[in-house]
Length: 235
Image 1: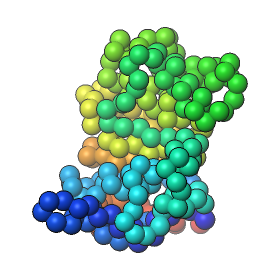
Image 2: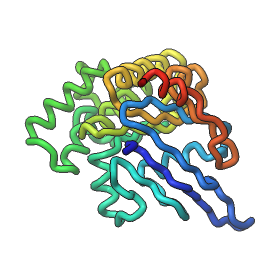
Image 3: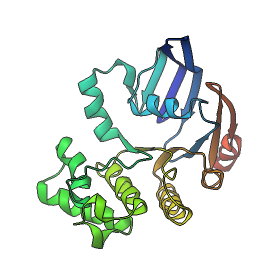
Image 4: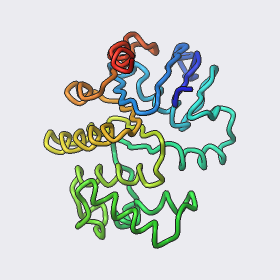
């Protein structure tokens, strides 16, 4: 069973000008351990696709099955609990809580999901921050560190509950070239370690680091590059 299985997913928004289909019957399967980049122009449906996978939004029709769970059948409260344990999400604008230290931002998902003891949570948070090069900055608040450091802390937070899936929506979209490359390096290292990654990006160089590239256009998947190569390699 694939880790991600989308079956004929449609997402329709109602606007004053009429109905708009952001996704038009998308079917997609991603196996555990894949590193997938989702690319396409603005308005192509990339972020909507990511929101379906993370349960942030729900399809108008079709099924979203993640790690064996039919996500669109969950209640809102159950979706939050499921997401906390199953999907780490990295956003373009970091979304760290400004009044908490980087360490406490990483601890928070573990507290929400009631995973491990308080001491173990803090030890794990520090270990993850060290992994992304921020061990010595763990006590700083987000405003006291750079944008690149905030994004690296957000990646550590996304990994806090050891989720089987990491989804990133334009993780380098708000960073300069140097910090973009640092974040890209972290993603590549995670992929090499077997982490399943789905990354929405406009950054062509970043997308090339992924083994598989899915191109969206007008709410449809129009290309899926690397899938056949991966299948050949696995035989």
